[in-house]
Amino acid sequence: MRASPPTCTTWTPRHLRLAIDAAGVALWSWNVDDDTFTMDEYGHTLWDLPMSERVSFEDLSSRIHPADKDRVRAAFSATRAILGPYETDFRVLHGTDVRWISARGQGDDHGIVGAIMFGIFLDATGRKQAEEGQELLAGEMSHRVKNLLAIAASLTAITSRSTSTTTDMARELTQRLTALGRAHDLVRPLPGGQGKAALLGDLLSILLAPYDDMGAFSGRIRVSVPRMGVGEAAATTLALVIHELATNSLKYGALSVATGTLDISCPVQEDTVVITWTERGGPRVSAPTGPGGYGSKLLNRAMTQQLDGAVERTWDEAGVVVTLQMNKAYLVA
Image (cartoon, rainbow, N blue to C red; front, side, top):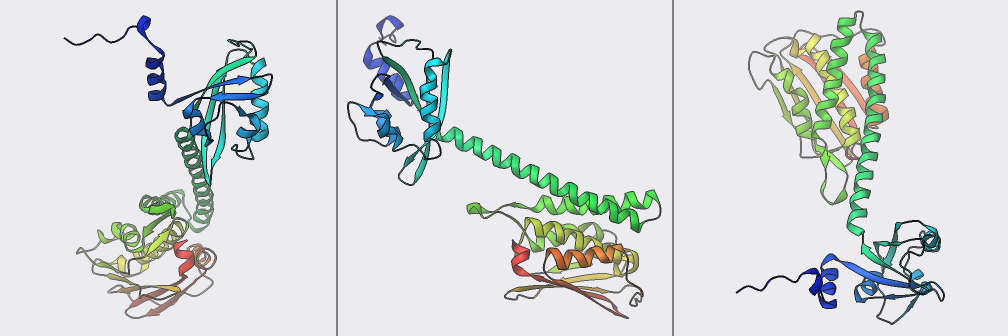
């Protein structure tokens, strides 16, 4: 016959100890007259201190993170004036490791016996790491949103100057923003906290996929590049560059006719990345006259300022060839 579990009236100190150990709780008492602490074994483990009957506040201070020492001393002194329960979180050092401890008790001398107050310590490292992760994520999202809003504002200004009707402006602005969205969809965290990146081949293929559907046959856009990472910031810039080139090709170049083709290649080099954009099978093209439009200015500015590179164009009867030269360190950063 199975024994019934112990009721509240049959709990023993051993049962309480088992429950406390299972909950990961360390017990402490604080003698407010001589400023010493008494802790159980788990308390000494949390503080990385050898077992002893009493521990002075100076002993504890030797383990508290330097940035938290004054705050912890003030917090413990203030607990006697706090009405109701209190909780104080702070960092302690285990060698080179940083752990978080949460001290909890009852203020206003509630439950004090003689000159001794009682409370518990909890290991709050996991919770604090999760909170820090959420803060980092929120900060990153805020940073990315601000950057995207700044880019959107710049694109709006450029598009408004390069179009003559609201319909054209809405169409071109939407296309440019969509290109940015495709680039950001590809950017993913790298292992080992190395930041975020996309693969160059994937980025180019995704950005150009909509234009491949507009021809008389599939596969008229061919991408042949080495396996290479593209950093988060560079992916945004490269998305704008590729969009501008593809838009020009769709209006005037090889992508403007059903049988035109586009080849993108990139030889492997040490410190420089050179992407060659080759259009064939389109209408005859000739070098434009004048300083160029806002799209060309955007393209040149992005390549020189954001990627520490340059852009060169060659026009011949077979089609335009665009060479994008970039500093590899800027591309992968």
